[in-house]
Length: 142
Image (cartoon, rainbow, N blue to C red; front, side, top):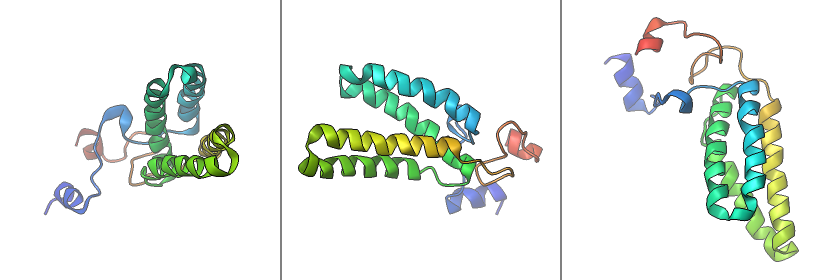
């Protein structure tokens, strides 16, 4: 069995979707996250659809950043769901506005932590470190 076929059958073969795959270092992360936060704050009054569009892009940036840390991208949606559950639970104790503020604080803390942790300086299962070419030409052209 070839390596690529073995990876595909074991579930380790990642989709190569250009910008959506691979790793994002801290600089690239902040280049995307800082404007997204400003846009999300500006669009907050327009309703949930506008905020959701920005949140989806933020989720994709988080996934690439988690890949740079060597972690699975599934942590990002799990974190978002946990923050939403926290907001829902806090609504009964604090009311809707303080609960939303607490959930936003948790998400902001996650954004800052992801932006401060250094990525892995070596190749991991998600590719080489950002800014460095793949060591094997087959990874580049395969």
